[in-house]
Image 1 (spheres, rainbow, N blue to C red):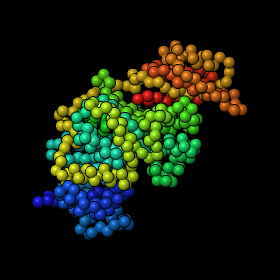
Image 2 (cartoon, rainbow, N blue to C red):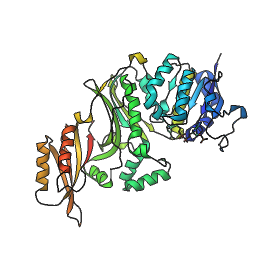
Image 3 (tube, helix red, strand yellow):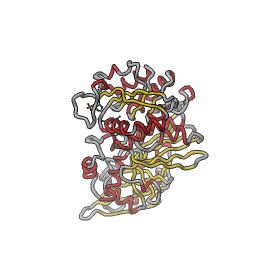
Image 4 (cartoon, rainbow, N blue to C red):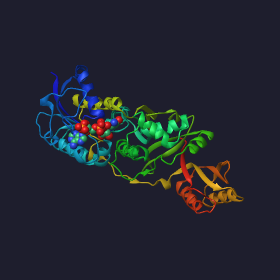
Length: 429
Ligand SMILES: NC(=O)c1ccc[n+]([C@@H]2O[C@H](COP(=O)([O-])OP(=O)(O)OC[C@H]3O[C@@H](n4cnc5c(N)ncnc54)[C@H](OP(=O)(O)O)[C@@H]3O)[C@@H](O)[C@H]2O)c1
């Protein structure tokens, strides 16, 4: 006989309303696929009187979300409110404490409180599922937990944010300025009205922290180097193109010498590389593991359709009775890694210097690099028309990031430097 599950759906915004319609339309199909029946027994959002694009039965609506967690006839709570604090946090903590399975798309909550939540879920033998919190429609979490379970992962990286990828690829394709491109992204619905966390790298950082736990059986780790894309301009995009590169905002997590390195920064990637061809709102995750080697999963990173695909996969996992550890392994087997700093890593780098055009500048620059143990691979100099300034682009050989940063600090103090030197790291993998 098929088991019956009652669902409470909380949050009916972009994602919640799309999911509701999808579940109603595909009820029989999903029940057959999962060999279980489900019913959306309860629904809640902030405003009862808001117009919705579906009908809500009177007995389905719950005014106060506090009442949801104590209802005996609820098996699964789907949280689609958002935010690391406030009502979403209370709902998820209390639902797990009351032995309800939880499905959420909330990366802010999981990247901050995931360890505590995971302990409650494990103690109460319920699922905490969050596939939709990382890269929307790209099934990366289930892939790491199940499909790639055999593998020892040593590195995971990629494009984890659709808005910033759309901005960088549009600036490249249409030659529009950063601000023009952000405005265009907002008009097309590819960026929220306040896209701050997409642009400053914080959204990617949340995802990197979650992926680190899953890849390395570790606890969440706050130590992460984060740089966003707001300082990238058309000149950098054109320079990168001339040198055979594209600029992408990448997130990285890797274990080197038993230390965890987490970082997010705009990165130059070879035009011929796979990742350079991932454009627009697409996300791509690259896993380096043994015995699989390099594995790439690509897809739409956000939006109601892609996010619903991930949410339905989480719901289906619960309907099939697939009780799992939220971070793939029991909490008492998870490890705490020491963290490494980006300054200890080695990169070939792109450095842009805006300088006064005068005698001896280039030779002083090259001397400064060599005094700081950084060797130069290539130099491009382009004078600005009608100005007494020029732009000098330097590509370095692989050098310790600490030495590169020290070089830039020294150069920033020189009287011929007219703008803060810019550093973009190059990924050759
Ligand atoms: N949008 C995406 O592409 C995307 C992709 C991946 C993950 N996510 C995640 O999915 C979640 C939902 O995102 P969204 O874009 O759907 O957000 P949204 O459109 O802003 O919807 C938020 C919903 O939460 C409800 N809500 C707010 N405060 C509440 C409270 N105190 N009690 C009950 N309900 C409350 C709102 O009610 P009203 O409708 O009454 O205002 C609304 O229905 C977030 O965690 C987000 O990070 C979104």
